[in-house]
Image (cartoon, rainbow, N blue to C red; front, side, top):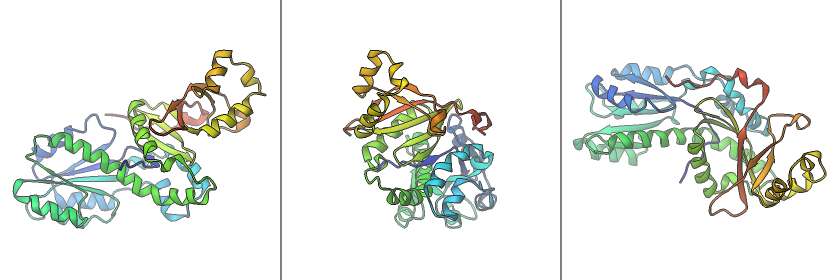
Length: 316
């Protein structure tokens, strides 16, 4: 399945191998990836860092300390003002064959069960890795002699990060969806999840937060540009058209744009972070979700005034 975290931000990936040259080569694979990497050649130092690293006291903590509600859901985007969020360890990539304590022993001592573990193995250790995977002790393993291992490291790490945030957000947000009268939220559609993942890649989004269960998201791209992503059903679009027809917003549109809106090719959007009376409307293109009739997505740059205060992730 495609894991769709309801929010996601650049996090910390821990790399552990007693061979310094090897682990530095692995670290270089992440030079163009939107996350922090911490490299360790000492197993105990790595474990101490993972179990005692500074935790973000933001939304990820709120989800586990208080019952989920629409208020906490709407407030989750405020994590963008929290500079400590990038300290969150989401994934550990560790070599099995190390002197003293092997990689599996370290994995067993990681306290946060949501942190995903990727084990690097040699030929002689493959059955050990398979057994550990079947027991749920690790989430992935990569054979170091596999010629595709560099690509697998990147693919598995990205999937592991998505799974970490999915596990951190899914139970709480699903409870909000169940409390809602909107049974058919597009967030539950497999085709929507696949489409959303592709859209995040196309827009170069590295951080995003769910704003409501209809599928509105606040996002930041690789340059720190704030973007609003909104999801619509056919019924929502038709209702918006009827609401618009008696407004000055509609009358100010030219005839071709009015027809494009009626034909579900374009839409007038406003930021859900702005009070309705202060909303500035943006005319933007609608994208239909393939294989999912009647569901559309629009994206546009957000101009909410306080966004200058964002603590954004900078590539080094």
